[in-house]
Amino acid sequence: MTETIFSKIINREIPADIVYEDDLALAFRDVDPQAPVHILVIPKQAIPRLADAKQEHQELLGHLLLVVAKIADQEGYGDAFRLVINNGEKVGQTVFHLHVHILAGRSFGWPPG
Ligand code: AMP
Image (cartoon, rainbow, N blue to C red; front, side, top):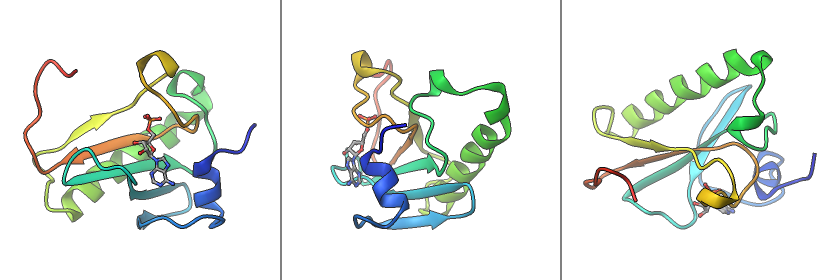
């Protein structure tokens, strides 16, 4: 599996503004925030895209969503946040290490752009 910028963050080879960490997951502020709160939640295990996740990852994926809710609450937006997972280059995925964007602190249109 190719190393990405996110595995470098996990390994502390490059700095990041880390807001949460446990054995399975890491969360840090996006370097180019698209909302007042913009945090990325990633598994420590490198799964390139959600579409690459397997049955064996079921518990890990559930864990990521529980971590998301915890962080949103921690940030003061437990009742108003949006999640984005870009899956594939065609929809804007640029880092091929699965990540959930947590966005909060402004209004969001629907349908999303
Ligand atoms: P995506 O387009 O869904 O693959 O999202 C990748 C996200 O990673 C973008 O929102 C980038 O701003 C963010 N990003 C890239 N490099 C870093 C970094 N070193 N630290 C924090 N966020 C980053």
